[in-house]
Image (cartoon, rainbow, N blue to C red; front, side, top):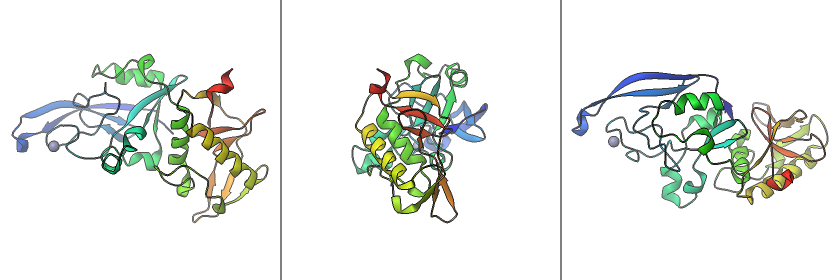
Length: 245
Ligand SMILES: [Zn+2]
């Protein structure tokens, strides 16, 4: 995930006259220099999935395909994730509801609670922090796939599975065994459509060295304590709900 540090809010005027409409005064929202929303009051934030970048010609959601997200929370964080469930419905939905390009480049935007509340205070229909749905284990597995460098876990909607041929060695332990552990964890997480068990920041994360050009590294799993857990950037560990008991 991409740890957003700054939220910028900028007044802007959109020109809808070519669509036979008036101009519209609104606000853009920027995350660390990336435009997250282009007309904050025109996105339907209170629906399960929403399009933060609306059509610049008429201001309507769905006029143009792509750039859809949904929001989830865990611990004191929230994260804007692809609308995985909606995308999986059919081929049209896979294209229509695809996430913004910056998720591939930087990861899913991760906000601390105070930063999210700065957005919520704009009063445009975003849920309160506590009203956000909890991140599921299934979504953790799919974020792991999204974050994996060089398509190392394949591409959604294919089931995430390690392309073990690309993993050369590990900084600690056996690379092949770690790949099997990652596959095993992914399979179990993918089947668990229930709230993830957030374990906090991981301390022991072995590096997997990749046979790629350029030379790559990957840190998908922690070996803290007695059990392994999936790790998402920036080094946060996630377990299954059953581990909480
Ligand atoms: Zn339009």
